[in-house]
Length: 188
Image (cartoon, rainbow, N blue to C red):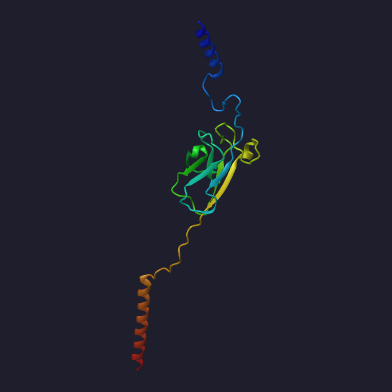
């Protein structure tokens, strides 16, 4: 009987210390602190000017693992038009690669990469684009620009002479010579 009481006591103690139910994102162990640090964008590549028009990938690096299920976290735009892209996550959710689904970029064109405030980390902390540690809505949108290279200039090559003009020049010269010879023959 005594072993049954001990066994029931152990089971009761175990039932009180084990969390019941399904763990959810954001659940923390007792005494542990939940991550409240908002993610930031560390880098966006490419950047600057003279980006090759064949460069069809934009790589965004975040400060911490992101919620990879967010579909509209970032976009590549020309003016107001969003380019078609395919998104893939790497480096444990800290790197987002947008592959532009076009044959090539346009020459001498400004592109904008926008990281939206819908981008959240795995704890659902919203993006802190302005770095102040507070959720500021549109002020936290991150925009980075790049410009593509100008077209390669084609070296000047003089156009070939049209064969018609060569024949015309030869005929004119022959007529001039014929006229000169004929004029001499008539004079003398």
